[in-house]
Image (cartoon, rainbow, N blue to C red; front, side, top):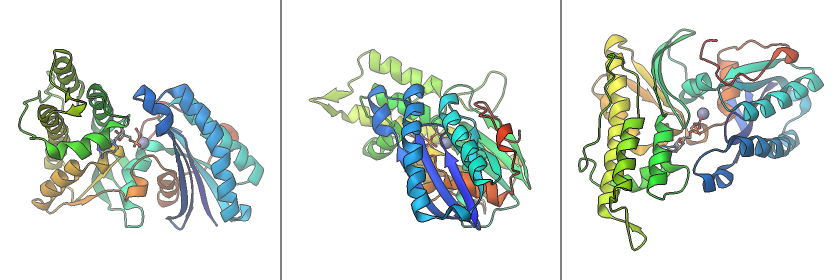
Length: 333
Ligand code: KG4
Ligand code: ZN
């Protein structure tokens, strides 16, 4: 017996089967090809693709598990795109009623937060950085309580990657492209603004850097020559990445001085970034801190982390009729 999990909050449709906190099966139908021409997720197209993909993935799932094996269903309730969430929530409600099993609503951000601990013990206390295409927040987790320490005031880190990549004519999603190209440039070549809040807050902000790069490109910065990125463009991409990583690590460092914990979790799509991993590992090594990253199949949006959180944190089930999609759901609500 185990948990059947469904994730449809953004542009990946995913289903997974979790038994004893182990993700036994997981499938993800990626929509990257659908959204690529628009350089970002188009909400209406995402909802329609979930409608097409979810029954197909579920059919595949029920070829490999028995209906009687499903003890509960876990579904992403929010945050996310309202139409996308609704597809998963409506499907999960129907299935839970049909199979006569409890339905467990799960917070997507909290699932990212715990995703590095799938298959490992969860530390009692840790700092958790969630950096994705839609969120950039740092949490202090102690026992079952998660307190948000800071968040982004404007763009999410992944969103900044995607927007800057677009300025350089790189395909969506931009994060993996810049990650791949940045080592070919000098990260110190172009000084970029390091955000400082006038009210002294330690919140993240990435839109100033993106605007500076947008201004440079529109003022004639030599991005391409004979169709190829110029050495200057590679320097600018490397400098952009270095600045984003520096901002993320600076906040981690700031809040670690206040909460000197032994563990940090780095999750969400941007946690795949090689430079971020390198800098976090350097930072943690000097402080007797263990940095935890998700395994590759649980970095970008996936149902495994949803079912895992439901089991690992004994999330409460709710009568299927009472579960709604909540696009602005906060951790701890
Ligand atoms: O967690 P995720 O799949 O979806 C959201 O919940 O938003 O994250 C997707 C984001 C995209 O913005 C993508 O560009 C970024 O994660 N991303 C990366 C890398 N891989 C994915 N950003 C930087 N470096 C990467 N290697
Ligand atoms: Zn996500």
